[in-house]
Length: 383
Image (cartoon, rainbow, N blue to C red):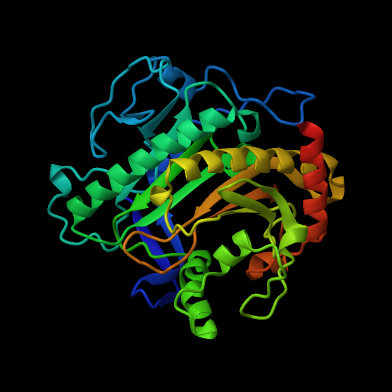
């Protein structure tokens, strides 16, 4: 049974009555994950994964899987244990149960007597992937990315509803992300995203504390219950000063925009080249995006990743930037109603150490306005 522990010196109870701090999960089964990177030497900057990896074999019906969705259709119940081999090549995108997540998805008869799940990790882990083989988002047609987002959203809704009913709770922690490349933590480089939905009181790290708590702080400072800094940034090209008196230089940081999303370099980047995607319409959770927003997000993700690819190729080697990256969906948790605005961070892998590990700050080598200028020009050249 997976367990979790909070660091007692870095944990508190926040305004949502949820534990917040550094949490470590212990999940022995994680050590049995397949590691399927292609280690062959290549002159290409971006390393491609094998065409016969586990995900390819699932798609071809050579390996069994619990298939939760195919494109816009639900196939199995989120807590199903019906694993089977089935050719899925006639679908564009699928969602399957992740066998190696740090939580227990199903509690069997011999665990039903557990009276409390307070320190147990329980929930649903899901993998979402395209049936065609890709390694990176920038090489995927926009329409296929939209199909991946659609099936992901469908399974999110279904899983959230099931966990609410199964564990009699209104509060759930939803973590959705892409790990792209070996150095980002991907055990299989075949492009995929993952979702962890926790049904127990796992709490949040310090990062989530900020995203959930800051909207209320801003409203109080501005004395305006309708105030949203993200809405202002996404829809206002004029000079913007945030509630703590920083001029945000939005126009200088803009990389790409469409009718639904803006893509900017992060004002205070965690890594050089970090990008932030913000929806132009106020939405707090991924499951609430409509069809237009999903299609706009697909276009924004492809162009943002192209811009980051180009920047890393042009960057000085001393910046130690890799093509691998994490894409993190920052969203309000189910049942919290914090008022936060959905944002997506694309963070390249860059070596850090020393004081940066001791504290939640980073040392950047380029101003994000200069990074944005390089990225904008690179997108013009690739059209």
